[in-house]
Length: 77
Image (tube, rainbow, N blue to C red):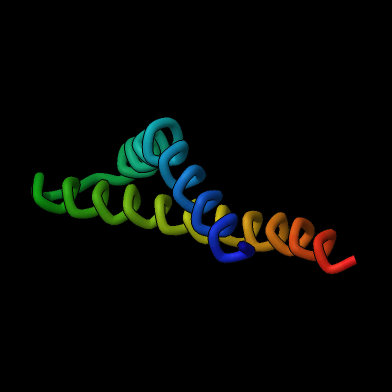
């Protein structure tokens, strides 16, 4: 049960980050730099976007793992 809750939280947090956070963060960070080549802009934007999604996935997994532990701990009593 704990794994299921962790996976659901991870998927939900990654989806929310992908829709609302990652794109804005990547665009903001890319705007802070100057580039010689448009490919560099795209590469950095994609890397930051995916990196933020991975961080959100990990945070969601950790929160879900803790929540799943609390749920499973109640069942043991």
